[in-house]
Length: 158
Image (tube, rainbow, N blue to C red; front, top):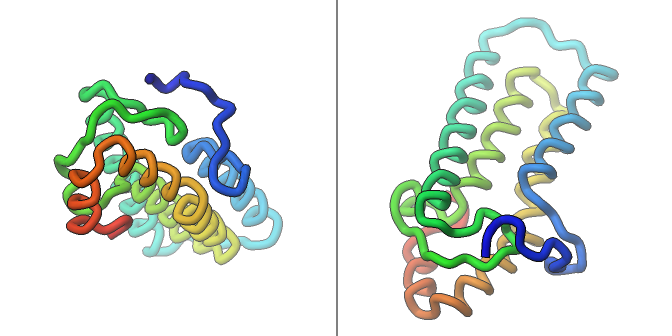
Protein backbone atom coordinates (compact mmCIF):
# COMPACT_ATOMS: atom_id res chain seq x y z
CA UNK A 1 0.00 0.00 0.00
CA UNK A 2 1.05 3.58 -0.37
CA UNK A 3 0.79 6.59 1.93
CA UNK A 4 -2.80 7.26 0.89
CA UNK A 5 -3.99 3.93 2.27
CA UNK A 6 -7.13 3.72 4.40
CA UNK A 7 -6.92 6.63 6.84
CA UNK A 8 -9.70 5.28 9.05
CA UNK A 9 -7.54 2.61 10.65
CA UNK A 10 -7.51 3.02 14.42
CA UNK A 11 -4.42 2.84 16.57
CA UNK A 12 -4.16 1.38 20.05
CA UNK A 13 -6.72 3.06 22.28
CA UNK A 14 -8.81 4.26 19.33
CA UNK A 15 -6.77 7.45 18.87
CA UNK A 16 -5.10 7.85 15.48
CA UNK A 17 -1.94 9.94 15.47
CA UNK A 18 -0.08 11.07 12.33
CA UNK A 19 3.41 11.83 13.69
CA UNK A 20 4.49 14.79 11.49
CA UNK A 21 1.16 16.56 11.96
CA UNK A 22 1.18 15.77 15.69
CA UNK A 23 4.71 17.21 16.01
CA UNK A 24 3.68 20.36 14.14
CA UNK A 25 0.65 20.87 16.42
CA UNK A 26 2.79 20.35 19.53
CA UNK A 27 5.42 22.76 18.21
CA UNK A 28 2.83 25.42 17.34
CA UNK A 29 1.09 25.06 20.69
CA UNK A 30 4.26 25.30 22.72
CA UNK A 31 5.51 28.24 20.62
CA UNK A 32 2.28 30.07 21.49
CA UNK A 33 2.67 29.20 25.18
CA UNK A 34 6.30 30.31 25.04
CA UNK A 35 5.34 33.64 23.47
CA UNK A 36 2.66 34.21 26.09
CA UNK A 37 4.56 33.22 29.23
CA UNK A 38 8.32 33.22 28.60
CA UNK A 39 10.67 35.79 27.15
CA UNK A 40 14.09 34.24 26.54
CA UNK A 41 17.12 36.27 25.52
CA UNK A 42 19.72 35.41 22.88
CA UNK A 43 22.24 32.98 24.40
CA UNK A 44 24.87 30.42 23.32
CA UNK A 45 22.47 27.50 23.93
CA UNK A 46 20.66 28.53 20.75
CA UNK A 47 23.47 27.01 18.66
CA UNK A 48 22.90 23.66 20.36
CA UNK A 49 19.18 23.99 19.68
CA UNK A 50 19.78 24.70 15.99
CA UNK A 51 22.16 21.75 15.71
CA UNK A 52 19.56 19.43 17.23
CA UNK A 53 16.87 20.76 14.88
CA UNK A 54 19.12 20.34 11.84
CA UNK A 55 20.33 16.90 12.90
CA UNK A 56 16.83 15.71 13.71
CA UNK A 57 15.40 16.95 10.42
CA UNK A 58 18.34 15.43 8.54
CA UNK A 59 17.93 11.98 10.12
CA UNK A 60 14.18 12.10 9.58
CA UNK A 61 14.41 13.05 5.91
CA UNK A 62 17.19 10.53 5.22
CA UNK A 63 15.18 7.70 6.80
CA UNK A 64 12.03 8.76 4.92
CA UNK A 65 14.00 8.86 1.66
CA UNK A 66 15.07 5.25 2.25
CA UNK A 67 11.43 4.23 2.57
CA UNK A 68 10.62 6.16 -0.60
CA UNK A 69 13.49 4.51 -2.48
CA UNK A 70 12.40 1.05 -1.29
CA UNK A 71 8.79 1.80 -2.28
CA UNK A 72 7.32 1.18 1.15
CA UNK A 73 4.86 3.29 3.09
CA UNK A 74 5.79 6.05 5.51
CA UNK A 75 2.20 6.05 6.78
CA UNK A 76 2.24 4.58 10.31
CA UNK A 77 -1.20 3.08 9.60
CA UNK A 78 -0.29 1.73 6.17
CA UNK A 79 1.04 -1.74 5.45
CA UNK A 80 4.80 -1.91 4.86
CA UNK A 81 5.85 -3.71 1.70
CA UNK A 82 9.58 -3.88 2.51
CA UNK A 83 11.72 -4.43 5.58
CA UNK A 84 14.37 -1.67 5.59
CA UNK A 85 17.42 -2.47 7.74
CA UNK A 86 20.17 -0.16 6.55
CA UNK A 87 21.53 2.91 8.33
CA UNK A 88 20.06 4.69 10.25
CA UNK A 89 17.82 1.67 10.93
CA UNK A 90 20.87 -0.16 12.30
CA UNK A 91 21.04 2.02 15.43
CA UNK A 92 17.36 2.86 15.96
CA UNK A 93 14.17 1.16 14.80
CA UNK A 94 12.46 4.56 14.51
CA UNK A 95 14.82 7.14 12.99
CA UNK A 96 11.99 9.27 11.57
CA UNK A 97 10.36 9.57 14.99
CA UNK A 98 13.73 10.07 16.67
CA UNK A 99 14.52 12.87 14.20
CA UNK A 100 11.23 14.63 14.88
CA UNK A 101 11.76 14.26 18.64
CA UNK A 102 15.27 15.75 18.35
CA UNK A 103 13.96 18.65 16.25
CA UNK A 104 11.26 19.41 18.83
CA UNK A 105 13.87 19.21 21.60
CA UNK A 106 16.11 21.53 19.59
CA UNK A 107 13.37 24.14 19.36
CA UNK A 108 12.79 23.95 23.14
CA UNK A 109 16.52 24.42 23.76
CA UNK A 110 16.81 27.19 21.17
CA UNK A 111 14.02 29.16 22.85
CA UNK A 112 15.22 28.12 26.33
CA UNK A 113 11.61 27.25 27.03
CA UNK A 114 10.50 24.90 29.77
CA UNK A 115 6.99 24.98 28.29
CA UNK A 116 8.26 23.92 24.87
CA UNK A 117 9.80 20.80 26.47
CA UNK A 118 6.22 19.51 26.55
CA UNK A 119 6.36 18.99 22.77
CA UNK A 120 9.24 16.47 22.56
CA UNK A 121 8.11 14.73 25.75
CA UNK A 122 4.48 14.51 24.57
CA UNK A 123 5.55 13.36 21.11
CA UNK A 124 7.89 10.68 22.52
CA UNK A 125 5.34 9.30 24.99
CA UNK A 126 2.42 9.30 22.53
CA UNK A 127 4.39 7.57 19.78
CA UNK A 128 6.05 5.11 22.15
CA UNK A 129 2.71 4.07 23.66
CA UNK A 130 0.16 4.57 20.86
CA UNK A 131 1.82 4.40 17.44
CA UNK A 132 4.94 2.24 17.59
CA UNK A 133 3.27 -0.81 19.20
CA UNK A 134 0.87 -1.02 16.24
CA UNK A 135 3.71 -0.68 13.75
CA UNK A 136 5.71 -3.36 15.54
CA UNK A 137 2.73 -5.73 15.56
CA UNK A 138 2.34 -5.26 11.80
CA UNK A 139 6.06 -5.84 11.24
CA UNK A 140 5.98 -9.03 13.34
CA UNK A 141 2.94 -10.25 11.42
CA UNK A 142 4.47 -9.50 8.01
CA UNK A 143 8.14 -10.32 8.55
CA UNK A 144 8.04 -12.82 11.45
CA UNK A 145 11.32 -14.06 12.88
CA UNK A 146 13.34 -11.73 10.64
CA UNK A 147 11.73 -8.74 12.39
CA UNK A 148 11.98 -10.35 15.84
CA UNK A 149 15.73 -10.88 15.33
CA UNK A 150 16.09 -7.26 14.22
CA UNK A 151 14.02 -6.08 17.20
CA UNK A 152 16.35 -8.00 19.56
CA UNK A 153 19.43 -6.33 17.99
CA UNK A 154 18.27 -2.73 17.52
CA UNK A 155 16.72 -0.52 20.18
CA UNK A 156 13.36 1.17 19.68
CA UNK A 157 14.79 4.68 20.16
CA UNK A 158 18.55 4.73 20.90
